Length: 450
Image 1 (cartoon, rainbow, N blue to C red):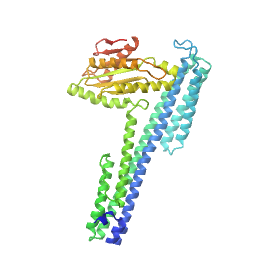
Image 2: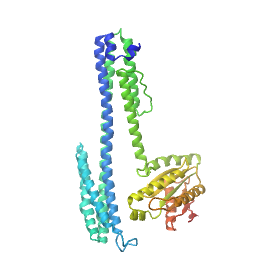
Image 3: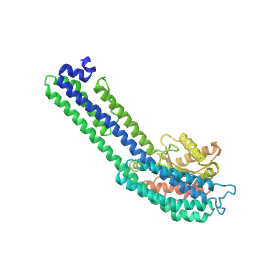
Image 4: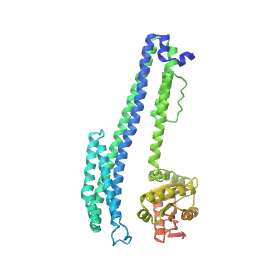
């Protein structure tokens, strides 16, 4: 039996019956090809769906950066209260805009070379038209006005041309992204259908082999059909999304190779799905949660609040004068400050707390089972610790906090808005302090000051 277990399918079936050997080799070959095709199709679907999404996202990010460069360029107006007479950053902004424009043009060319469907080509052309309007009628005239130091004209173009065209381009990019995801999902379903068809052919071939030789039926069932059915069970589990089932490989023949390849494919899928989930729920720069992850968790926490009366608080923090850091030291230094800040915050949080990057230099810390009094003390402790940290180049920074405890009848948006109001008063009241709101009807309470 050990010989039969480890011998190849061809040798096993040659000993039993030449006819069965031919049929089972055919079935085993189809099975191996089917597994390879399924693996390639799933991996291709993953890569093809991720690449265009990244390309479009990068184009929109660069378009947004160009918008910001125009806005920052306007700040060089001498009439601006923040104008620095020694600053000459408008040329830097202009150069960045030109560079980003050329990068976007290159990405569009690469995107159009892809094997797009007719509808995707149409949507891509619509996006390209919107983007050209944004560039030709908005961005480049604004650059020209900025070079002429006509800041009023630049601001007018920003409001009347750049902002509306950017919004239109964003909407068309969103429609194109949705279509790409729909196409990827369709391709994945077609690959799954091919896999099921090949699997069924493999099962039928095995059953036909059993019918041709009743004497060898027991041996066939024990040596081939049972392991194949085991592989089919694993296929079904993988198709149903169960990637944690252990696939044991105890044989060295072709079926062992099938199970080995299946186990490798399952491992790849698990890594891919885990990486996609991580990318979708974390901020790329700081590693903190993003808004999507925050909104998923906050519903669970608020359900506990309503069901069991658990206390729930949060704090919003914002780096004081962060724009000056970017202006004086550059965006790379500003990004490093955010990374170091997020690391400092995470090292100071309790195991139950979570950090979310809300946008720019603004972060949200969610504190389950925490009252307003406790979260205020935590915020004050964190504020003092940050003030003592020596950040690269900028040396030290200060942070303003707004804290609030969630009421049983509030939505999380209302709750977050109260904390945001407290943060606003902390900012307007001199920064580097903690403010709190007890209830919707309460006035802002000054928890701590400098």
